[in-house]
Amino acid sequence: MKFYVCIKQVPDVNAPLQIKDGQLVQDADRNILNAYDASSIEEALVITEAHGGEVEAVLIGPEKAKETLRKALAMGADSGTHIVTSGDEHYDSFAYAKILATFFKDKEYGYILCGKQSQDTDSGLTGSMLAEMLNLPYSTNAVGLELKDDHIVVKRQGDTGQEMIELASPGLVTCSNDMNDPRIPSLKGIMQSKRKPVNTVALSDLNAGISEADTKTNILSFEEKPEREPGKKYEGEPEEIARQVAQLLDTEENVI
Amino acid sequence: MSTLLTYISINDGKIKRSSLEVLSRCNELAEKHGLKSAALIIDQDPAPAAETLKKYGPSVIYTVKNPIFKNHLNTPLLKALSTAVKQINPRVVAFASTEGSKDILGALAANLNAAALADMSEFDLTDDGVKGKRPVMASKIISAVEAKGTPVVLTVRSGSYDVVEKQTDSSVESIDFAFNEDELKVTLKEIISASSDRIDLSEAEAVIAAGRGVKDEEGRKLISELASVLNAGIGASRALTEGGAYDPSLQIGQTGKVVSPQLYIGVGISGAIQHVAGMANSKVIVAINKDPDAPIFDIADYGLVGDLYKVLPPFIEELKKIKQN
Ligand SMILES: Cc1cc2nc3c(=O)[nH]c(=O)nc-3n(C[C@H](O)[C@H](O)[C@H](O)COP(=O)(O)OP(=O)(O)OC[C@H]3O[C@@H](n4cnc5c(N)ncnc54)[C@H](O)[C@@H]3O)c2cc1C
Ligand SMILES: Nc1ncnc2c1ncn2[C@@H]1O[C@H](COP(=O)(O)O)[C@@H](O)[C@H]1O
Image 1 (cartoon, each protein chain N blue to C red):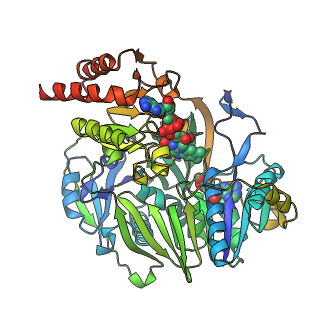
Image 2: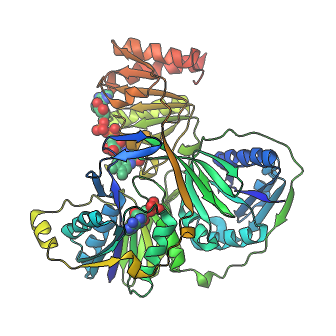
Image 3: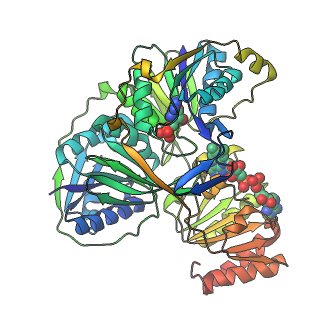
């Protein structure tokens, strides 16, 4: 069975960042593979290693994002498609979903896997948008996947517990990083990745017909999070500080 | 008159508080902008919730009734939402941010060719859409965003607004809906639920969160004791849900749940940004950690520096005494 995995290059949230004139200033060298997408790749690899099949990673992004596609190949994906953008555009989830929908229009596959959200924006929209545009059944926030004959069983984290869902093929799943522990590419994997096929497509050649109206949301500016007033640290005899704080929670905060 | 529509989430027959927060905000905006605030209930038995809702100010309560809505399933929910939205033609469709609403928000937006804003901490109307704020970069910073068009669909983080009661003579209107189960390409086989007497974390007034410092059975026992004295929900950091010590549904943070209790007590948690992303809105934050430099102390109102195994027993004992008086 063929699995497509949609992956995104995102800024590392642990890297230092600054806000200048309402804009975010980050170190462009500290971009990484979205953590949730690393889990999607891992899951597709585990399934295809056990049952046969192939894994293709698809990434939309500027030239520089190719390093992230290479990482997916180094982990073990068989091939990749890079849809190249100029990097200056401000696409939102809707626009990315529409580009992906155009790419998938004439493709055949068992399942498309996405991350449940982008680690930098936490939007969590692209996957289900893409499913709706392609008219595919889907499941989000998957914490487990199992291939059974011609369909998969998704374990998803829902509001009241974990829902076990049978999903017909072709279908789409968005993955949580609670699903697995993604492998670190081995040296051999990195060497092999250099010979793996990457299909590079210019966004303009895809004819996705992305217009202004497809970016439906705009970021106006970035702001610092309001700081919390620093509280007090209690050090000393455990017995004493424990009783003291318990008292304060009652008398000062009235939360007991 | 155009409408602001709030979707009402119901779990086990109970309206989620976070939905009432969103409805209260929509009531306020409707008044400010001269619009109508309406609510939408999609359930196997919407009548009791519709009755309760009259205390919270919507002028119309729309209901969609079908046995298929006993459990969450995205295909029928999406169809019902799209039917209702096309009929009501609202300017905004607002949801509390839950696993259920996150599951369908993108698909609904694509279905309606509408703009979507997820996990907002603030929102208001503009002349031609919605603007507001949402946390990004693992909640390290806030981004101001806008969306244009009609409708705009959005989800709101729990704890962003207060619930305000407002008695109204709401009318209840049911929306026709039929669903052919043969159309389903998704089948719910089973729900593996965390034990049902547990307190819903996202709604809890007090939350005890256990981290890697809670190493063993003895530590977990202390956590349960503390939670039961305070009638608190138990949550955990990724370090413990990953290791299987706690149920994955109890994870608090970027991957897990957002909580906004009156009291949060983090026990043996370092305070990684991805964890803080899910609890920074708590009113009072207490941290117990043996490392005086743990980042959680930067945001804690009360930081107890010490070994949790030594701090918790007298802490629990003292709280018990306070409770008894
Ligand atoms: C994309 C992404 C999403 C993530 N999402 C989440 C999420 O939703 N939720 C989440 O929690 N994490 C999340 N994480 C993981 C997060 O980065 C941290 O790894 C995690 O929160 C650490 O958990 P911890 O604080 O329990 O463990 P640690 O960081 O290991 O901290 C343990 C703390 O316990 C203290 N301690 C040890 N023994 C004792 C003792 N006897 N008494 C008192 N204190 C003691 C130590 O001093 C230390 O500070 C995510 C990570 C990524 C990359
Ligand atoms: N530029 C992109 N290229 C490939 N996949 C993407 C891209 N942007 C988003 N996705 C997919 O959508 C998920 C995130 O959705 P969202 O949170 O809406 O940004 C990612 O985990 C990817 O699977």
